[in-house]
Length: 380
Ligand code: 0PR
Image (cartoon, rainbow, N blue to C red; front, side, top):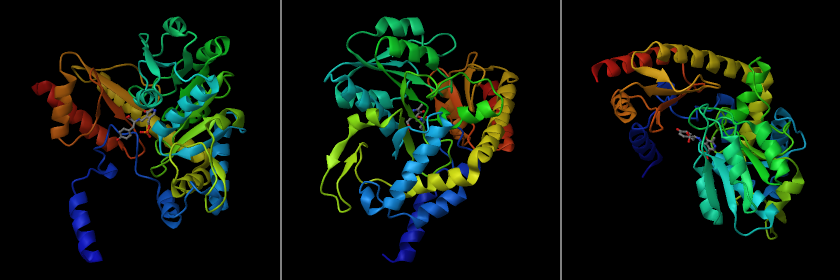
């Protein structure tokens, strides 16, 4: 086929895809990458951080990205990698905890609200996974967590910005528990890690959840979510290289020369890492504060509209730009289906629907959405 034919056929097939600009994607944690990131990505497409000594410049940039993220999370000495996503980051953290513990088998304890990537990690490593019930505030129940910790426990996990509701577990208390019982504490801030620091700077009350809490050994923080970086750009930060070393597997034969891999994957994108670096430099703290300020304003707008919608309620007051919507009598599955018929794509969490106010969402999208939701609820 000619290039022209292929491009024509491609645009026909991809016509079926939803796009962020339509404002209809209300349940995604991804967004349209920033234009500068796209430009940089295209220019650096062949960089492979799996063979980093072939690309020492790209490697230096990855280290700078990690340093910027570490500084934001109050530990400029953090070590880590930009990886394929939050899933790989979480698997790496559990693998580090498992290797550090010296145990082959054991269990990890996560909140009921934990992302499925921990199920994947447990299954891959043959670990038991225990899910701790949540309190009425949708955070981990600390008493129950304490009860579950035993000699088999390899790691506990706290979440700073849960997938469903964006709530933050009491990380400082979990850190004390982890230190007392000598277990590894990993914090999953895949989404919240690029929201909470800016909320704090904007004057919102944010509890201590990052490396300021002594027992925190590692943090997942994904540039391809609220960082507006192109996929694949997850992030894993370890408190020190001592911890990260437990992941190293030597690859002696690389064209660039021998290195240690900590990541699950070998060949990996340098372009998304370099694009992330460019975005951090370009937007800076001020730019991201502005993005978060705007998303929070829209979140507060949507929350107040939901409160004024008969038959609908907030699951809880939003902490970050994630809104959980539940219904007095309507079945969330049916509401979800009716919304889909009208072109809206939310997240269905069983007992509630989730809206994530990403940077691609504008006020007029929310006005139209609330109008459709009200009509659907009236006609059920
Ligand atoms: N940790 C948390 C707290 C998450 O919410 C997610 C993903 C992950 C880890 C895993 O991240 P990766 O997907 O990068 O491996 N959270 C989103 C979710 O499950 C992922 C997502 C993104 C879903 C875009 C839909 C979508 O359109 O909701």
